[in-house]
Length: 321
View 1 (tube, helix red, strand yellow):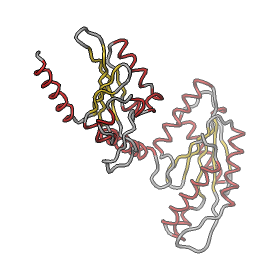
View 2 (cartoon, rainbow, N blue to C red):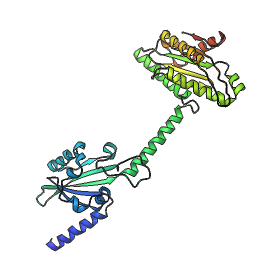
View 3 (tube, helix red, strand yellow):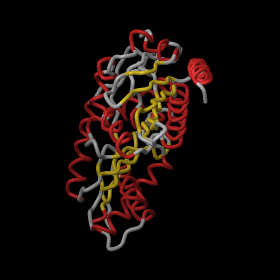
View 4 (cartoon, one colour):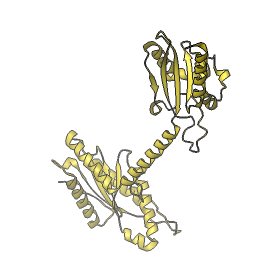
């Protein structure tokens, strides 16, 4: 190839590189910048004339903290391609993400590849860095993940009270049973019911009844331990799953809940007057069973709740195997 054709080829390469919708940076072994395409000019706001001849770490000093130059050294030494994925590294180059309406990311999300460039003798003399904008994909993936999480929440969360629904609670109960069989760790199950809940609906209306359910679950969350689980069993009945809890501790927790809820004042938007409610609680624990099943645990807790109501309500009762 004669000198004139080589010069034309070089000019064509620069023209093509400036048309690409990605950043291209060419650096030598001293990390000096030898080429800087128009995409890099636009997104870094650094003119090509200002960038060429400078060292890359002078322009982007944070690259040292990201292991960037370690990978560059490996490309020069081994002659292999190297990559930075957006999922792992997000923003290799601190380029502002300004063209997107969605402001999830302050900086452009990128995938970056490092390619070895050889001379005619096969020596690696330069590394070509390509920077691809992955922000659109990252935004879409975030939205998809949020949608999937919302769907998952809808499948396991009771819409009104925002505690676990019955289906998900049964899954948790099954997992606790399995854990008990593997390790011998005991748990307690409580079923509680609001006493005379129909009177609240009849007196104050169903919207007020809904608010009582919401406020009750909010109170239960504050009174229980972070790892305890609350689920709406149906209507005004709730299940409390207390891991690593024996029967005596479960009874103490249930009694504390009964007293605390009974002392609380409830109110509704359509009434100026506050009122109190009482709850009845039935419980059982795996420590009283030889080889419990999910159905057995539920049945015994339900029997205990029935006893609490027959005893006059506002009571705690327990049933063992």
